[in-house]
Length: 171
Image (cartoon, rainbow, N blue to C red; front, top):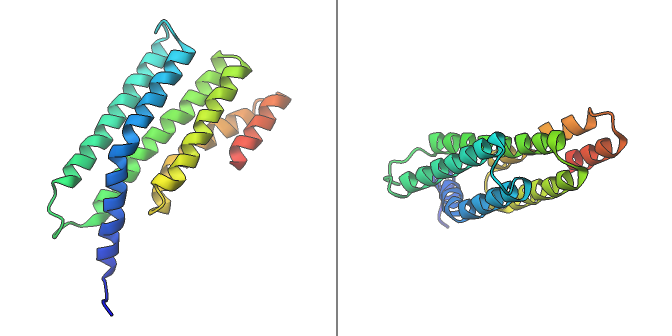
């Protein structure tokens, strides 16, 4: 029976995260563009343009990280710094989605908020499979995406928003 080191499995997990990153990024960008088009067809909102620009830059950074990993020497590679870089990048992506949820709650109707929360829940569900090889990576994406909007909605004082916040927080 062959015995593998812990480092071998860490490198395999990291490789799986980096390979899926390239596949998941165009979908993330498409959803971000669709959300901005849904909320602001004329591109007149400075916040939404800033948000889309920040999301696009974050996606580009994740793509560059994945490309750098692809061409790195895998034999002498230490996976820990790569995991940290990956987790930081997806933390900020998740946080951007959470901020968008709060912005939509403050500036749009309950219908648009519900659509935004549906998208956020879908992204959280998709991250279960795309980050399945690393629980910290999943939590780095889902926690900053769901927690701010859930807390904000629960603290709103409006019954419908409190119910939405509990549902989102429970998700």
